Length: 146
Image (cartoon, rainbow, N blue to C red; front, side, top):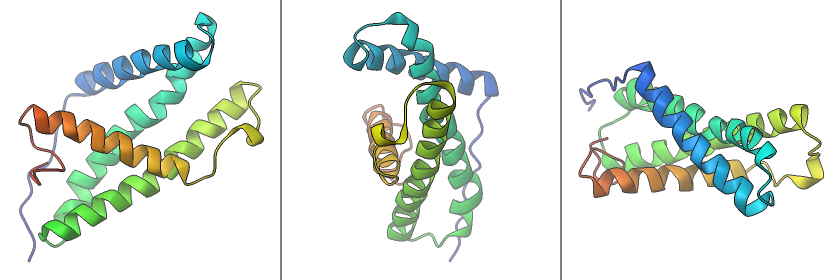
């Protein structure tokens, strides 16, 4: 049995404003906590975090608008598929983050975690984002409406 899900749409301006603002704030926090407060590292930290904020937005859109309508309506199937997509996408986004850092900084492979850490980190990030949506009463992963 297939469901009639409504496509998720959002103006690009809103997507850019939200994802860049989140990356800017998180980039500042990362630099403050790990970088010794060196302001010069803030743009690079922001750029790397954009892999997860901006890239993650497109992963969610792909799931919501392309994959979800093609899956059975069963809640368990939807949830497992979504977490699986988050894991695979997180691994890919983590690789993109790594390659960007490798190309633009002095960071070398021994300083980066295993390939699967990006997948787990992206799952944790998405669960946190969806928790915020749940607390605001909006459609999300937890209530099965989003």
